Image (cartoon, rainbow, N blue to C red; front, side):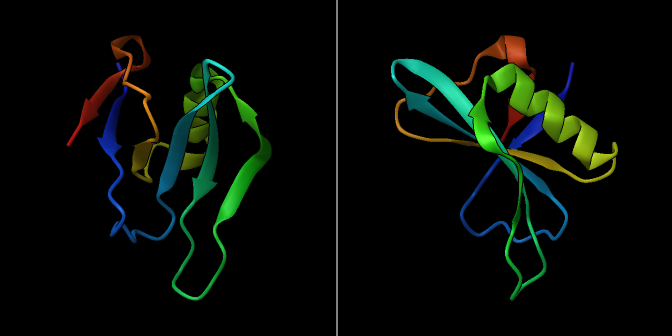
Length: 88
């Protein structure tokens, strides 16, 4: 089971992956971004919203098993344990 870290607004780890999960039309949607070095724009993959499962899978593929993966829960979104373990 994958272990994810809860995203905090002061997280500035370059190359870390952030999965932002939010409510859209009554369903949970997400997108993935990679934190860039200070002064650079973050990279967003692929630029459109997707299911939480697809976003987490995409994040894992971009982390190469090395970069930490953070999860940012917005609005009224609650973590679903089927997605993995969320620490922090």
